[in-house]
Image (cartoon, rainbow, N blue to C red; front, side):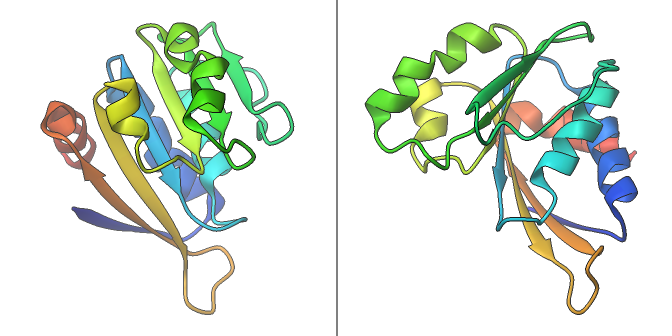
Length: 153
């Protein structure tokens, strides 16, 4: 596990951009945290790092948005309103993602096993007394080790 602090939305986006520059697909990124802790901000930076230049918005009302035109396709999903495993399967997340990156807000616990993709989990915590400060707790499986090493190097 790795703990990183970011002092602003821009710093969170820079960190995510670095990950976007280094990742290879397929990869599942699990985004865990309360409302307003920077999950969508992170995905905006990730999309930039992948080379996507358009606008990236929260998929809350659409549940899933796909961004193409970068080095790899990026699927951004918000599973807050999905209830069952059948709901998740019906979305076709794997088919939509292909060899790209799947970033999921409010992931279900069983999602990594269900999708069978290498994963990176990022937990977002608001900084004590500072509205812009975030602590990001990263954990990952072995296949993602080179991304983390490159990000720190």
